[in-house]
Figure 1 (tube, helix red, strand yellow):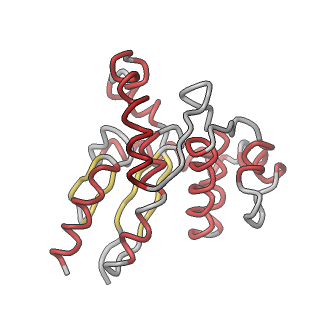
Figure 2: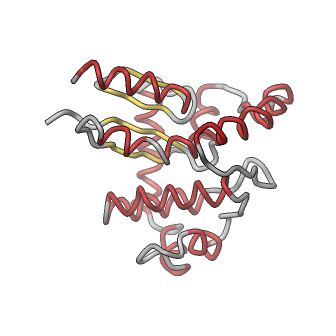
Length: 200
């Protein structure tokens, strides 16, 4: 069976929002599964000595033009949250806690969180915010999200994901690996698909 596509993303990443809504369907068209990993871009950039793009005025000003345009092309709603970047720590821990229980549920959770943050501009800073963003998902209650924030396994999973991302050469999100070949950015999904098609 073909190996899964590795998919590193962060809930604070604008273009991860687009990729979360595309990657599973894209992979399925070619008989692949996707291994999702929620990382902390802040910690990744800190380890690499990189200034996050939103902290660079010229890049952030361009993002405010480019991101809505990219969402329009992807057929997705767009609303940048305020404050930006958003506080997504609890959502990240909740993702890993859910992933340990149900892989598909964790994907649905990630799509719901991404849509809340970048599709509607909503906060996911509190357990209530996270649960509200995922109101249709079984088991995503404020109490469950609060528990995820204190779950040592979830915290270790984030640390491990960041280390794996660094080892894989991740330099931004989303970051995909197809049989070891890296693709960075939602705008590389077309190239990823072309490579999948070539592999048959």
